[in-house]
Length: 253
View 1 (cartoon, rainbow, N blue to C red):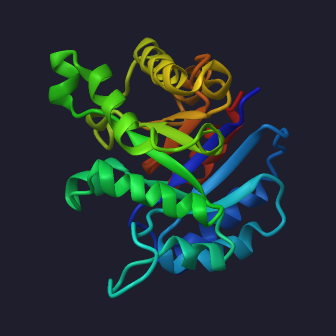
View 2 (view 1 turned 120 degrees about the vertical axis):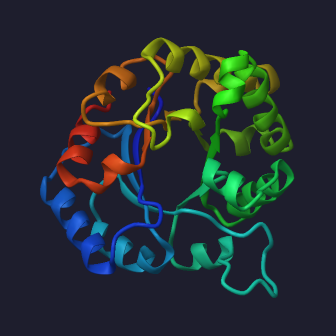
């Protein structure tokens, strides 16, 4: 079975003390994970070291950065390189979240460079893709997300692609309370896998976890995760509430 992943994206939320308390509450639940199940916390950069210390040796619990720069180093005040993350022992990094594409004008080419930086530093990228409402309403979401994958991922080798995670995020469902139906989620996740298969083969496509990232909540996680091509979730608001995220973790198949 592919890895099944509950990934928390805290975005720009929580004070240091609140972050520490939230992690403590979740970890104290002592959730027993199977070997193919993982929990990843994508925390604000100032909390990376604290969070890594908190999860410690807890089996299959990991910390991710929410972003990295597309260059190895240089005069980029305030930015964080993949090499810096690697030096902290961070193993995961979110790449291309819709908010970064929209607010920071991150291009497909820039994201391709970020993928390279992560992989060169032995960091697993969680590559985000997804369409806005206008594209969904026009019925061209498949072409839209396929282009995102082709422009940012298809320069990679099959071996490199097998080491990444993809998160599909319908932009129209992020923070809106709207959620894709299970049929919509399964349909586009299966399509994304077919796009990978067309470039790298079915065996490679079958190894890549594809997470759903649009208003995943405690009440809908089990239904979404039951879809054969949905391998967990990239969770925003619900990951800031300990009991909700615990429920979501327990919904992993």
